[in-house]
Length: 285
Image: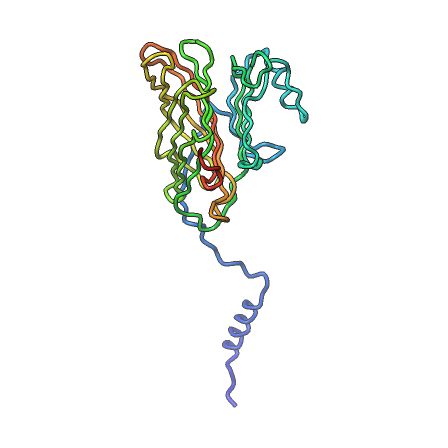
């Protein structure tokens, strides 16, 4: 009978012990090869995660020092809006299903539902978090609502809206970019025509954030001028990229703001938008 030399036996036993050990370190697993996308911070917006709902919030504050008590009433869990102030936006719950909330607090003389706002105090969008899904890739399209408020040379606050005013938000999950087309027209309660067309905004598919510089076209409602005003936009995408019933589960919400002088006029703009998969929207009449 052949004998195994002692040193070989020791090596075999050592190898067997190492293989059976429960404390052996796990092998390194490479992180997904994803492009790093930086959506820059912008002082125009407050951006944070809410405590109560863990939503991604974007906020613009236009309040004055004396407005603190008014805003506090809107923070109540069962708010009783003070006389002369209200939140202007009521999104379609069936479409947005609490994934998106827009609050625009404004001073509104009178109680008529169609009474015009005279001053903005605060704009806020809350977007449910983005669910991570392995292999999310390609292009995703979202459409929906757009709202805007404009002053020209310190004139009255002009409002514009369009239930299809988010004409397109195209998210490229591979390139990490967002292309956006937002507009309002002059029809019904919408009295000011505006448009934003921007391509290649940074989009971070880890957090759902996107945004950057924009130019807003504002058509003078009482003249031929088209003012071009530079500003900035910040939005979030949430939900899931997964498809079900011929649509993906993504939604979006965000704000934009711009101000400047063009053709001798001082123009100030604030806006908000929200969107979902186009297949979730009712057909346009």
